[in-house]
Length: 280
Image (cartoon, rainbow, N blue to C red):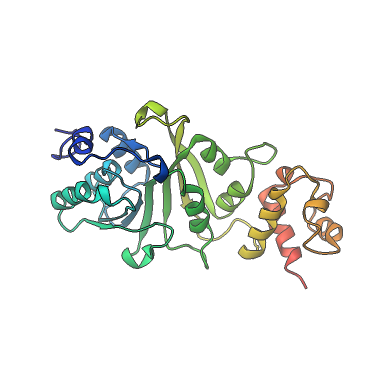
């Protein structure tokens, strides 16, 4: 028996259903149900929210979310091999779990969940960053979710919470911290997973702010930040010269030094530049 419900231990589930992790799908299974329940608790009270989970695999985190009282979980799983194991969880938690056999990059997840919504996921390594950027750049703000509780490679997690001045600071930090409060909530060693990855992992919790910290057009800011960090070794006046012929004047008007590099610019500075770039 497991520590959090009456279903079989995950190692037994994996053996029964022949669920070896596939590298091509970015799979690394977290088998300690006490850890999965702890991750679920990072997301806060789940009793009045629908939860989106991406890449549940054999269902360790799924069970943690349901055991912690989630109102409803919608799990998006691309690997059809995992569906029988997830069906057993759905049977144990009637009307609480819906499994979508789909690609998370293509599914209309908003339509499947009733608000309020939270996202909690041990993201597959090969799509994690792309999904995060999508969640951080919805058409309008506040977003359709209240919070994101996501597991990444430790290096990616550090990029999300990074401050200006360091090599980890970049586009992810700006996009995340502009409109969210962010923190690393947990660190996990490779041996917590099957198979063990070559890197450490971390759980990042992002709470959506009611409005952005600084005024800026989201599309303009995203394009400016992407261009600036695409050539992070160059001075801003060189890295952004394609945006406007008078880029030096616009940088100065935003309170930035044309000779600075992207990693030196705080979020407020990028927002000021986005406002200048939005002017005709």
